[in-house]
Image 1 (cartoon, one colour):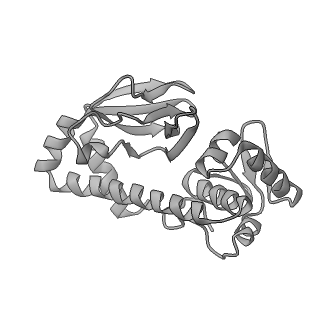
Image 2: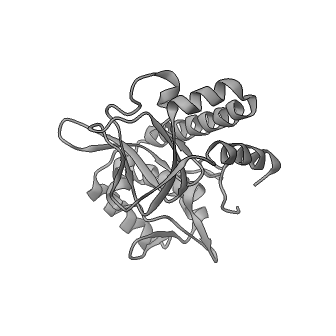
Amino acid sequence: MNAFDTAHTATLDALFETASTLHFVKGEHLLHPANPTHSVFRIMSGIVKLYSLNNQGEEYIHIFYGAGEIFPLRWMSSDTAVHQTVYARALDHVTVQRISTADLDDMIRNDGALSYAILQQVVQQFTIYAERLENLEYKYASERLAFRLLFMAGRFGTQRGNDIVLPSITQHDIAASINISRESANRELERLERKSLISREVRHIVIRDREGLRKELHTDSDPFDWRTHIAK
């Protein structure tokens, strides 16, 4: 973390120092259309999935949030409940801090440093969504999956020797996040395993050959490499 990031983290720490702390178990909803809220959450640990449902009850995943990120930011453009049609669910044990949107709005209007720190969150999340659009522009399931695995490595991966261990995100969620079927995702994961680019453990996908995954995309760089915490 550089001095710039440290300063913004300290600013957000001060903002949330009086916030309530909440804990959610795997599968529990933080946001649900049946229970509108006027709150903003800051994730301290764990991963949260933000998604909506179509008329057939199928999930459309918008984004995965991780530690240090604030959501939902829709409150900045609306004074209505911030998630009328959106769900947020814990993918593992999640700890968050919660503050009311009204309190946050008041503080932002009177604190330039805080306003700038929140702006950085907005820009970061815009970039994540832009990368998601780029991911969906790929024509073939093989390319979409390779992009998504590299993207998740940069966002949430943990270095283990020469490998990168991805968080416990299900095959269903991976498939839904790149708009392919679970069956297609499984076929492509099996193909990547046969090529020794990845392996699958009980709850995790492990990237064995990062360079090989890049070649699946015909590129020498990773998606989202400006924020990756995995050493290249």
